[in-house]
Image (cartoon, rainbow, N blue to C red):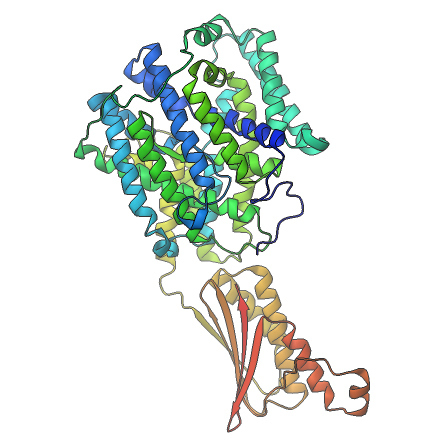
Length: 570
């Protein structure tokens, strides 16, 4: 069973009270609404009418609502990761979606979106066999880049970059600062329920302040008035068409989205388990399956491709409410709003500085969570190389956005975002640097010296090479050093001691081979009286203490050749 961190207010399977559940769900809906800028951008690219654009956005919102509920579902492990990992309009699909719209209109976009969702469903069934591609250093890079990937959207909103009127820019920056200050203050110093809803309270205050300062203007109210009150899905609204020439860009976008999903769900797993060791791929596989189904549904309904939301995961981490039932509340609200576009308009016209403040707040938690994954393992030159180069090029893509602009259109989606570049680099570099790295290391000690210093240095180097968890290597180092000391102190080892360490990311196994007498490993501690009356009981005490340092241990002897086998779960 997972060990829940002490600061978590609502754990994964906890059901908050109904009013709290709905409020937490609404808070997540505000964040999800930010992603609706994707269908808005596409609508502008095509020149849709107001009614057509409203329908397009509503159907994208409907797909997000369905996907958010599916992602939290874990009935018999059939579909969904079982975590609070909401679905949003996926930024990985932006370039391929615009390409489809330019070549064949919205019908081509919807057809290709539905088709690529089917591909993602198939990918989800084999992703577990590809886990070698996602060691901790790769997963950590993906999570860090997920947080960094929202910076190009976040800072222009927060700092009013692009606002031509200096007076308006000053008002917008003021709104952003006040909104962020409220969210931050409630997160750190808030009491009771206010600490659960810092983003929601900050956003509401941001709306009010924006209205007072004139940032919410007449056109915003007109958009609300023009939106239809009620709308239902109409499968013939835009139609569906296909082009195999666009298959590669959409498949590439889907692969990038799936890589991101691995990082997002890994964070969800780690958030609810103090003993988290590595990504658990059964829930990741079902989570990618959920996104694939949702993307297919989005295409059929008349929306855009869907992906897990890193910003919402950041919000869950910040508020310490990670219950998957919050996803059902948020998904239900999204589905309701999709059918009532006039109400949904309230979210669609969210002031830019309010969006920026919320994204700064949530992105910071994602970036730090990624570094937390990286620091959970020991590092050597290989892993440093993988992490450093991947982050350098990934971040560089945002600093120098035109660097990869001349790529062939078929592969350009791979280079559209720093997230995609860093992910692919991390995977490829990891496979390259692992060449020649064995899964076994050996140290030989003389029969006169236990070599404690050499043992600790050997285990440190071995842990770095394997990328093992630091705390496991520390425990193993003490166990091996004490075992060797006992073998020499009690005269059990008559020859050199050969220490062999084997590692496979889930198990750490150490064998100590020597010629001599076996080390007793009693399951009970000898009493003080037994030790005082029988000096030989000291060796039993040593064996008992060593047994308590490890997950399991056994000693065997044949014709004086002894082997001590030490095992740790990793």
